[in-house]
Image (tube, rainbow, N blue to C red; front, side, top):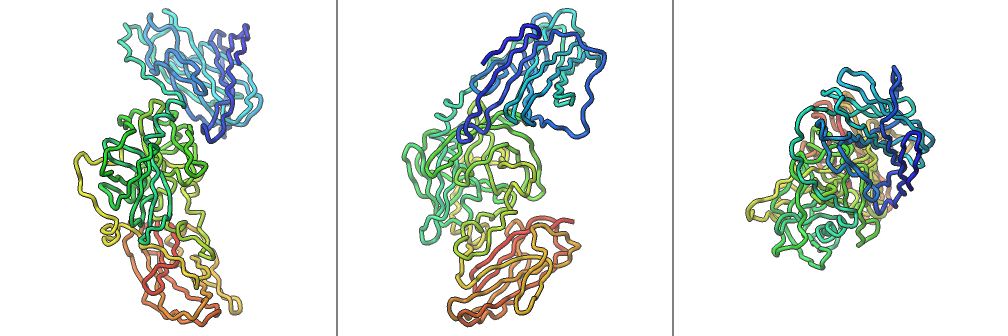
Length: 528
């Protein structure tokens, strides 16, 4: 809907919120303010705690509304007099819905506010956006200018741009922005299902991946962790079973497989450094089994984690079966893959083994809890993923298991009732419990305890031991085996204590092994 307010030349576009299955978000009101009002002598003062989170900002000479997104058609930050006629700056925020007052302060190279644009508007949703346009005249001072956006008197974003008196260099031809419908048509044949099988050829999980150059398939390492074989299924009906990888990095959470036959629908990789925080991005979700839907959002941040390397934040979250899906720019080029458990290699082994009375899945190990405030998935950037340039030999899953790349398979045992890890072992009457159970501990805590409760369904005669591993699946230590001989229906307990004062900060896991088979597992983190 287009609203015209002649007194301030305000244009306002309302964009409908699309369902999450279609796009990650629909922009609510999109405001445009032409800068024609002389500025007052002073500006607004920002509040101590920001109420508005800046998602994206971009500058250019011309922009327009394309479907549910604003597209800057010639993004740049330098403008040339007398050829260029305007500067347009776009901002996108998250904040409280309701009535808001928007102000745009344009500051010249001396830092003085020379133009002010302001208007009020009611945001119907928490995601809203606005842009301001500044007409350029030959009398404007060359140099570095600043545009400040204020919402309700609070500084909510700035953008620096330069005005130069010089002939404008030839602008590169604009790249075609693909609509969500175009992107869906491109992504659907390029995104594949990746199904994992155990040694008995039982399906144990379904994830996603994408077709890269030639006959290569990229997915997360977590999707193939501890597999005995693997099935690739594409949208065009091609199905193949594979038993190994041509490249991988367990810590960085990526893996590359090679199809024995050529595949169609390969997706192009974005050039390095061609995308940045704030950019719009797209991926393929799977809210129902076998179904693909396009989802959109923004790149909202990045971070280098000590143990696993670089990750980028995106503000959407995919279904578990969509983990490993490609994330692309608005030009359809792959910038990375979605990883929902990328900070703790092997995390999926807990979910795969969860059944019946198996110990409760420790939900606080999810990526979203390990990176508070994201509320979304992480992106493994393509800069980390190494696509083989030649016919690399295949390393079979069996060889990877033997060499310790894979975690030992966790097997549910009906005689094990529950297990827990914590700081203090406590006994009340005949019942043993663990107190102060949590995911994160400090080295000064000294030691941790693991307690396993047995409830044998038949006579049990075996041994049990505890193994401690680091995040790279290297064995740090193991306890001597202890007897696990229990009568049917005899509730019994086995506990272990191990020191953590000398452990390097990072992620670890403990396995309880009954006989030779891991039957319980959990992960934890040590800090200074």
